[in-house]
Image 1 (cartoon, one colour):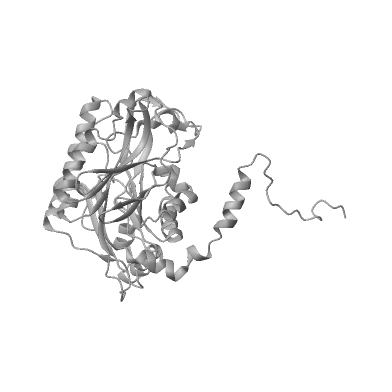
Image 2 (image 1 turned 135 degrees about the vertical axis):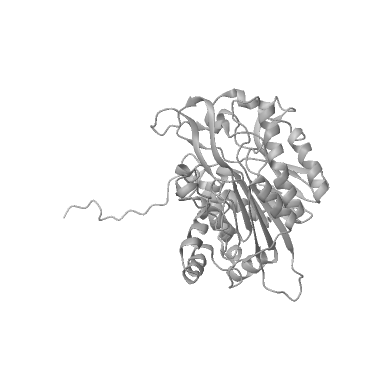
Length: 413
């Protein structure tokens, strides 16, 4: 359990070691700074790290007692913030309340697969209830939320967690979506029963009426060392769809796609106002990139980004290697959570806990997207015809890079 300053409660005489994944006992860098800097220094550090929204520090939102009670009872971090936009004369504010959920698995990976899946659903239910009690309009869960992130093991038995688009997890969420009038983005391991039982890494978009709006399949598959998710599924075939929901136009850039700027660009070209990045990534591999990539995408494409990462260390029955030169091991590393929102004006929220389950909520005025487009004119000043010409040439077998060599480099004196 964390204290009010985001630091884990210590045992007698402070001898209890800090929780795994914490920063010296603190849940996040933001909370560490808040607890150890003077108010004046903390305000300035926050301005540098989080930016300003409409020239003001991001505003925290008070949540209903029902939400905070659920968070205390089930021990998950909950935070809420507001992104504002300038007042307009011809358009009313378009405020939508959006939530992100991060969680650890609920039982050991040695348990029966059905028990693992049910335990995760039971664990997630109170968090979704908290989002519903807070009036969240759109909620996104983490990548492959129904299972441990077992793709590091390269064992095919984990394929049993795959399910059809309209399978058990979708049915579970459809009821909650309808109950809370909420759009839910559900990233799962999909089994395409109509095409030879093919497996995909897929986000199912469930409408606020409980209907399935559509799906998006992961565009980019990591091949880092011998960690290769194509052992299970290949690159998706759904393009860069943007889903027009009752609350706004959303896209889903699943996990590894965040490392590809053109992937972010494509969702923007298709009109996304919010792009979710449900992920599963560990500290040594990617944490320095985590606060940068999504924020940069929000700036470059003039939309909001919701970044979600699971938490905890998942230990598997059989040791495996990860192509990093280290001996075989039974876990992939610590999933560091730190879910957060980024806005098109370069502001962003503090992150959720690095080691606890969490729900982060944001009110965002979607008018900010157009306002930033007008201010910076990134779309107008882009040179798409030039980029398209280069990419077209690059795809040809006889492509030659446009490199101009200094004629004096190798000339003898």
